[in-house]
Length: 321
Image 1 (cartoon, rainbow, N blue to C red):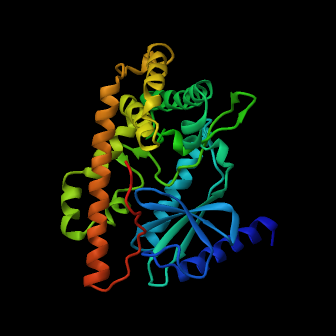
Image 2 (image 1 turned 120 degrees about the vertical axis):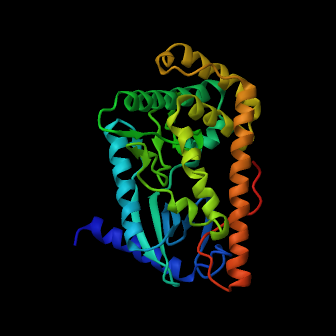
Image 3 (image 1 turned 180 degrees about the vertical axis):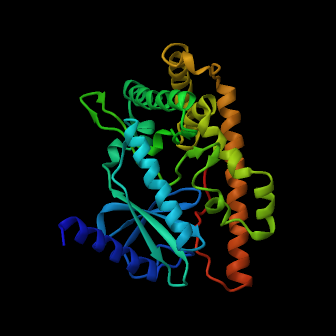
């Protein structure tokens, strides 16, 4: 047995032990020493004492082993495509785990990166020169992906969630190296216009009584549409400044992005952005995500309090959006 295989088995065993004692309603309770380091819309990122050098992102919402296999295959394909396009991606190990109630989850295990280089930290703390260098690095990637999609002959399109909080930047002597993407849990990849990961993983937390409405309205697809459009992905990038508590930096960043649109990104045919458009976009996005979270809380209440069932998703407390 090679050292790499042995290490992978150790990781899988540690995650199985963690999952066996996990109460999704109280994820930090139990015997394991655990810290929640972040929440996604359908995921939770943990730091476990048993795996001190890793961050483990827990994805739930899988019906069976077939849907798990489909998800892991698409994520691996997504990482391969990004790598081929020259986009650095954090080393990611996908670990399927069966829950004690017979359900299925997938952990995305990545190295724990130095906090000082995380995008959200730099957005809050870095000087303007460094922040603009971070923006330039991400804007270059957006340009690469949007041009690739426009010229694609293989019916596949691919993009990323470009918010700075999804990247790690190597900042040295005032310079910024190529960013490292660590948010790959949602593979933004389409084939013939259809999301390859499917929409069921996003719909699974929604109460069945209103899930049909989300499906009929194509709510997930319309939400994901924005990441395949240059203007919307830039609005989302800047709108994240609100969530990270630094809307005061938007005017500077907005001017920087608009200069890029007028020069390097001129061929992408995206209209100039303004502060009001960023604010409207963020407000609309935040309202949609808050409604999604409220629906999930209703589902948790019904399942746990009325039906006395296990609720396999982990929900955050109040979120400042």
